[in-house]
Length: 182
Ligand code: NAD
Image 1: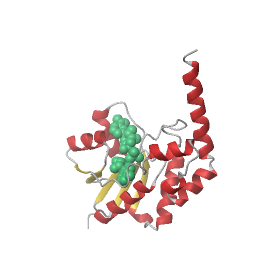
Image 2: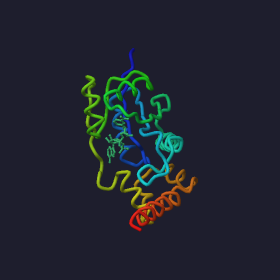
Image 3: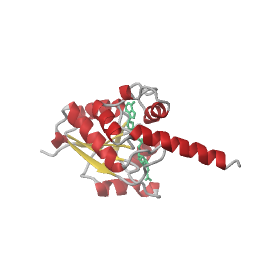
Image 4: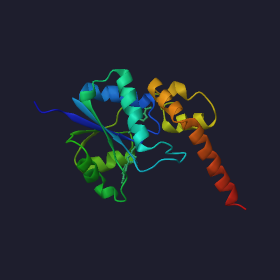
């Protein structure tokens, strides 16, 4: 029988418990999920501190920790392109065929809808806390970011000195800002 596949694309900077809950929910509706690691070319900035490779490991370890069957997902890095009108074709070129799109991102929803896809807006879980922006803010401020992400992600971020990285990037951006006013 033909498999029903859905796609979720996110920067996952970093993976957090909201991403994990939404993946669980999508897997109730489809046979297989494609998890696109968006903006794969970006790393080492405050908004995008982690490389695509690090984010692939984060997602796969978090799914393994959750006991998700590894035959039910594909994790695929996706670089951004300069042409929004061509982006859906770019995504299709990188992935197995899919029929359902899950996103809370307005641009992603717009672009896939225009191409005739069934786009679903998944529920947002505790969006005030469960967002990459909040996780990164807490990392910079030495607050409790660990409670917002899977345990496997905490371990990986510690292993690669991720908090030190984002704190250094934050100092770099502050110093560049100050220098621009000298
Ligand atoms: P994200 O990691 O912020 O979110 C990914 C998805 O996770 C969202 O759609 C949202 O539905 C879900 N999510 C996040 N927090 C949640 C929560 N608390 N509860 C439940 N679900 C939650 O990533 P994003 O910024 O939406 O990623 C979109 C990617 O697509 C970006 O990398 C962007 O650059 C890329 N993109 C590229 C182009 C182009 O190259 N031209 C065009 C459009 C989009």
